[in-house]
Length: 273
Ligand SMILES: Nc1nc2c(ncn2[C@@H]2O[C@H](COP(=O)(O)OP(=O)(O)OP(=O)(O)O)[C@@H](O)[C@H]2O)c(=O)[nH]1
Ligand SMILES: [Mg+2]
Image 1: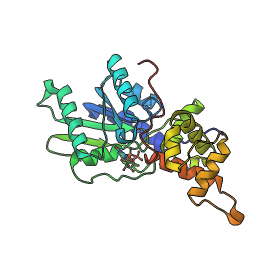
Image 2: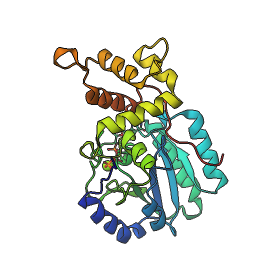
Image 3: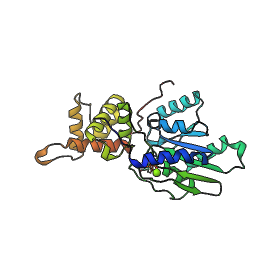
């Protein structure tokens, strides 16, 4: 089943962003460090052609550290400014601001005007709270928490929070599957049987030891159905008559992966390293 999610507020916000982006002297494009390519909105790339833009690989604490290093090397090789952080750590936001100051040191007199943009649920509002040092923006672990632009001012800078933006057609399917598994797409637009099956295949292929450790397998069964059934039993997903509730089990698996409970994983590597 194809996944599509482009609610009305995103269309409006994209229009608004086109008109307001010039207020910024630095755009912080907040990516999910586990999926730097898939979480980069192609429309945003186009909007920022004439503005200083920094790619922020956030949620680095739950991304595969070796792969994040490869992404940073890749961006360096194509002369794209990028930094990996974990916004929940205030020290990391300080490092981000120092990085912005270093890049713009020629215009120190000019107040920094940061526009924080990206797809849903990548941690835009969390980064702002961390920079400002108090909870000025609403956050949450589901996508589309921020619905309107919001300006925050400190003595050194203006920061604009913006709603997470996807694009009208999520293609190819692999990209939509990665976005869904990461938590960028609303639950209502996802079939957990599909997203869970994608997630399980991905883990079997790329992080089998994480699966083994988390769900206590001595060896991973060859059959995928046996793996998901055991996870279902461990997590108590049983219906009447002892039947395992597979969709519920897939949902739990996806949520545990999203929270980093299986370990630090990345969905994609740069094409050229
Ligand atoms: N592990 C981890 N979680 C993070 C990090 N930054 C943010 N989060 C979590 O990610 C979820 C989304 O954070 P938000 O700041 O609301 O994300 P957003 O990009 O503003 O989301 P929208 O407004 O919906 O577009 C929350 O549960 C945060 O606690 C991080 O660096 N590491
Ligand atoms: Mg937000």
